[in-house]
Every structure is written in structure tokens, then in C-alpha cells.
Length: 123
Image (cartoon, rainbow, N blue to C red; front, side, top):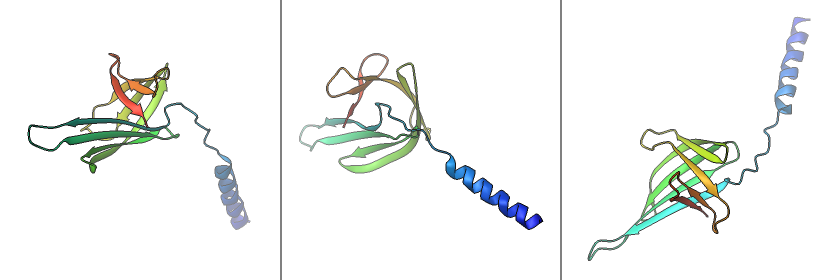
């Protein structure tokens, strides 16, 4: 009887855990956002720095920094939305947490800082 009860308990736990569902997230920030900066010194080739933020639907993301197309740094971040502002909380102390706003009226769509400057552009 004890074995039967244990078996039924295990089957019940598995059935309940398989029935849970992650709600669909259709937030407009989902996708890839990027910022590219390029500069050159006299007589030297241009140095390009590219930053990417990849937002996924479970409120997580990946931040990547490239220098001349070579990946030099990456870390994960959590994101949340409150009253039209998005908070990005990084998993690495080298990157400062930040809050941005989505500007849908502009084409392409941009993420802006509190002072109105462009933080990143939708890819």
C-alpha cells in the first residue's frame, strides 16, 4: 500500500508540473536592439564598437559587446516593465543597471534614456 501511495504521489506531482504554463509575453521590447559607434584616429583604420541587447519573453536577456566584429564581453540581464519604463538589471558588476523607455513613434523604434538620448535601435 505504501508503494502504491508513493507511486500515485509521484505521478500526481509530474501531472501537475506538466500542466503549468508560462504565460505568453507579447511585449513590444522583445527582440534585438543595438548601438554601434565608430571612430578613427589619423592614419589608422576605423575602430567599431557594437553593443547588442537581446530581450526574450521570460524577462531575461543577453548583453553583448563587440570590437571590430569580435565578441569581447557578454553577460545576462533581467528586465522588467513598469509604467512604460524598462529596467535592465545585469548579472555582472562591470555593467551598470539602467532604465530606458521605448519610443514607438520613431522609425526605426528606439530605446531612450531619461534625458531623451538614444540608447539603442531595434534591429
